[in-house]
Amino acid sequence: AGLAAGAAGFAAGVTGFAAGVAGFPTGVAGFAAGLAGFATGVAGFAAGAADFSAGVAGFAAGVADFSAGVTDFAAGVTDFAAGVGGFAAGVTDFSAGVVGFAAGAAGFAAGVTDFSAGVTDFAAGVTDFSAGVADFSAGVAGFAAGVADFSAGVTDFAAGVAGFAAGAADFSAGVASFAAGVAVFAAGVTG
Image (cartoon, rainbow, N blue to C red; front, side, top):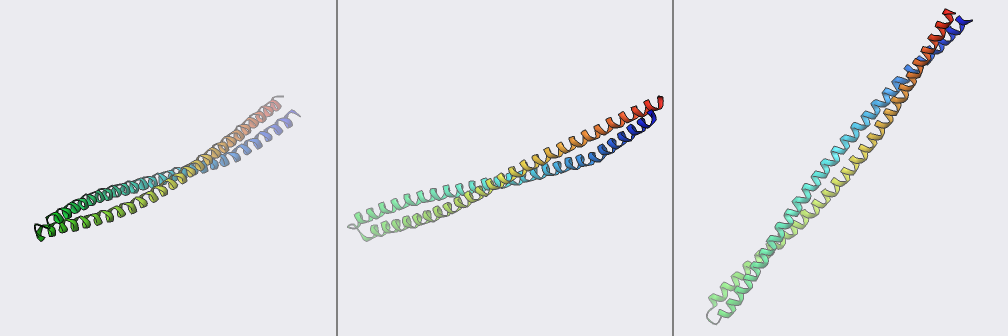
């Protein structure tokens, strides 16, 4: 009777050991899936950071063009004022001769030309500024997507670790059952 009980305990231990071994690959597979999800999250995070950097660069270029446009616009206003002054001087000198008037008119025309160029540069700066804001927005969206992927990867990694821990627990339980079966078997043989 003791021998039969030992054999039965041994068989139960072998069964538990097999269950632990069967659970171990599942834990390993979960751990591998978690690592893969983590890698995907890191890659998404890097892509979002690159888009964010590109958006910031485009925004800076737009601000630079906008600043250049404002500078040209200010120069045009200054030249326009100078032209108006020249025109006034020409009107004043009209009594002294048409030559002074013509010089003032030429200065006025140059001022109008510079003013027009300043307005054109200002418009170009506004356009580049708008493009920079759009790139900045796209970079922020990419960055948010990368953070979401990174979070999902961390979740998968945690699930893989939990699966691995469960497999390890099953394996430990199987080993314990196997040891208990061996002890019963040994007791049956000895008895």
